Length: 54
View 1 (cartoon, rainbow, N blue to C red):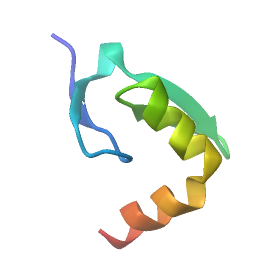
View 2: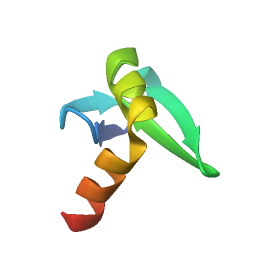
View 3: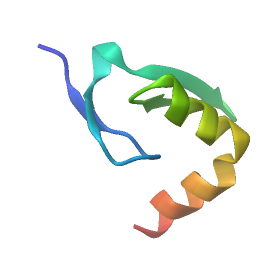
């Protein structure tokens, strides 16, 4: 069974096996779909700052 993760862009739960990956500054991040991955790519600081403060 695939592990459940939360998308840092839209806060939806998704299966790790079905997520989209992106490597940013040497670290892999997972997203629930291509749209969220693309939003992260366009402005990674917005999402990284939000997760650092939560």
